[in-house]
Image (cartoon, rainbow, N blue to C red; front, side, top):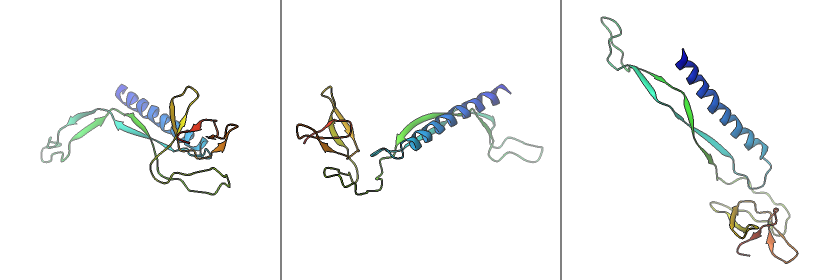
Length: 139
């Protein structure tokens, strides 16, 4: 009985993570350059109750055996970097990436960041910047 409750609790936990991932994808459906995420799961241990070939009656045996699973766990959350649909924005400096790659931008602390959002404008110094104000590197 307890094993069944633990397996069910593990299943509910990973299903909640799956729903959270889907909700985040839906919340960002109109975010330029957003790449959807996908939750991937892994089975937890299996307990072998009966081996294949175990007698199930005096004249028959189990062809495959019986194993009981102990639920599932989150293995990873991967991002899907496939191309979205391209649309004309009318922005003079807007760009799109076809295939693999990112735009490299300089963050406020001087480190490098990467984005697929190609909405660029000119700042007061004439530098190409994204919607967050990060400079495209190289210009």
